[in-house]
Length: 273
Image (cartoon, rainbow, N blue to C red; front, side, top):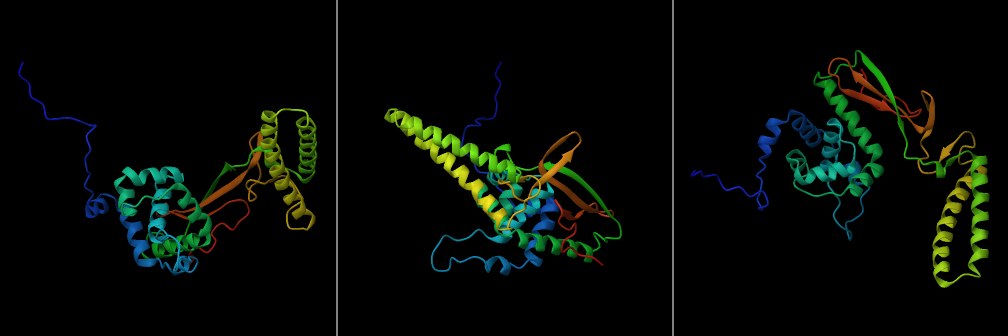
């Protein structure tokens, strides 16, 4: 049988053409976020906190970062590593980033550094949506969920528990020092590494206990030294360090117009009529 097929080699190198007009035409959400950030967001609050005029590498553009974050959150993508990965292959992310690669650490640092600025931009977004008639804020539904914090048991406890942990660490350090005297070079090298880890753990706990004594940290309940904003959450039959997250949704557009976690205000700085 004489059969002919088109050439097929998935291992070959090739280029993919991305037309910005086609991307925006096929994705109204992306187009809306893109237009909003370009037309309604000032970069001055971000620029005021960057100091690389004389030396230092160029900073990532805040407009790009805001577009990536807003689009990711709207699509249910919350992992900075996944955002980094999507900038390599997803046409929507490639367009929003202008084909720039940004690692997950840069994304995380941007969120941590410009948290308040991002909140204000979000408030602007709600205001613009209200002015355009997409949300009216006449009826807002609130719902919530409990989320575990990134807080392991090792650095979670009450003041009394941390004092006991400090005492146990000191005991372990003393035992290691006593055994190290009579052991060989290989054992001593391992001991030094372990001692360094214990000393850093002790210093971390001691810093917290010093803050409590000076009145700079809470002395009631359990605290996570990994995530100090977290609090003890009761979820059904279990208790853990976490957040009681709630969102406010506009009835008309089903758009999220506010949020809170722990005891922060629900719609902080958002538009209201």
